[in-house]
Length: 297
Image (cartoon, rainbow, N blue to C red; front, side):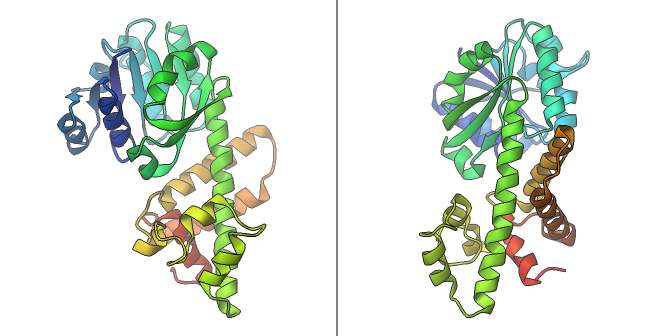
């Protein structure tokens, strides 16, 4: 498997495609942004004039698209990539979308004689740049076996979560945990500040105690304790609040489909909705601490 089509080479897809080039794959890239495609071409890739061209005469296609409707548009119908790809092509959709769409598109791909996975990622832009992403993968054993050698060149942890759509289930659950956790961390740090506990002391204690967690250790929402966190660069995003809100909304859609209530997930969704609607969607998700402090409109 040497020839890869890559559709959607923006902030996440671009570094992923360039890592495939570094690994020796031939990559044919398409994106609505000419600048994004040019960055892949500069790294040794070739330009595709359309999504259909990117999916023609290749062994595997990776898609990284904004939402479920875009995945449907690109894959399905007479002008979709499933209609032009050769039989046996492997498709990997790394978009973060709703479970229903993921399962329907994979079903259509298999009916067309293709192999397909839903494989959303965790790790943000930094993980994409460093080939350190976690892939949460749903689909058949055959599709997973075929795609795994390619996924390993873009990520450090590749987890087969089960059947079609289960990658999206894992992503929705994981990011619901992350959104809830960051709001809890933010509330705790603001409370500590108001009661006279310095942020560094708060971090030193909590990170070594029962409240310690990945979000705190990597994305502490106050400047200082974690030098690489967005709080030290005016909340320039690694993972934006807007994307967190998108994922939280997907988690709530999944909860409704499962017939259950997620009170904490619902509250985190409401808080991020308020934050983003106030014009803060381009900030890092850890900037939710601004809302807790009352610093946003």
